[in-house]
Image (cartoon, rainbow, N blue to C red):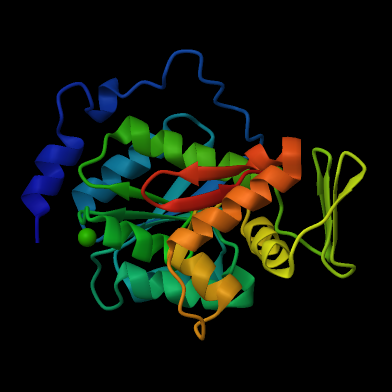
Length: 261
Ligand code: CA
């Protein structure tokens, strides 16, 4: 337990006290239109209260707090929020378990989740993202950064509703998953089956970071013994074939890849 560290390091930094945690200059706070409801799942009451205060002060969000993993699942079932801010270290059910359960349920499979944790290793970050978290904030964090991340995830999600149907079309890129056909600016692109599956999985999880291990598992399958390095090679080829649309597959250093909608 690192309650003290979390408090002093995260939230008690000079200049980051809630009263002084102003939005960055030029921030357009009303971009989201409606008031977003954020569920804060954090058992440390001081931290939860500061997070709530930070999110609500811009006037574009309303936050509610629950203090355990099982309470989070109940709250989501009763009234689905627009985003869940999920501490990993929780009583009853930990954050990883909550994330796993939410992702497994069809109604919450695409619910935006940002994980909060004191753990800092890359393995932990990757584990969180593999469970489907949209982003990951490591304690100690600044309240300003946390607010910015929450807004970024909400904005991305609002701009790109969960894919429905078997066709993706945006910015000159058209991927017809039924016909197994891809084109960029009207020109057909010839992809191998593997490249096509890679593109499909990236698009289905667009705006979300996917680790190399997760891509390997989903695109190549468990049965294949293959090095994570070959994911990089395939992504490189796919990018090159997609031409101008290739830049939408971003490398997220130390984590993996993200298709940007
Ligand atoms: Ca905690």
